[in-house]
Length: 189
Ligand code: 5GP
Ligand code: MG
Image (cartoon, rainbow, N blue to C red):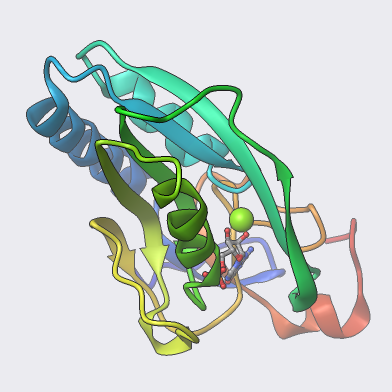
């Protein structure tokens, strides 16, 4: 934690690539331990959870399946007035053990919304995994069943997390410099 980066657009690295490697191994072990013989359906919330999700599933050793949903709630770093489900699951989750993955739990609205929608479809179990959690930003009460990192209430980017679709490919999670969103320098260092 607290390491500096040469990229001036990032004020501080909060979660290093090494931290992420270790954390994703632990999530995979948690899946292995809790879902052996249950053929769980692991669900990635697009697009932000992709690197985290891919890393975790590459380390899961039990039989499992994957699917995707997309739920758009932000433009830039502004919360949208009417967030919406853009892509839904391809299959029924009735009678399935379902684990939903996201990059971050912030206001809690995304997870709370998906929980409400999925619960109506009668899964046998439904759990939520977050790569990081900004507990100070909650608008609705929500607690992930498994969270890797608690982080401060700052706009973070990297390892799936974006600002206007940029920065998702950073190998770490860091705090975005306010100069980026003040100047709107989308593609420049
Ligand atoms: P929530 O619905 O809990 O407010 O936020 C969930 C979604 O908002 C995440 O999947 C993510 O796309 C976006 N989000 C919330 N906080 C941040 C942040 O600090 N950085 C980025 N890049 N995305 C965020
Ligand atoms: Mg997201």
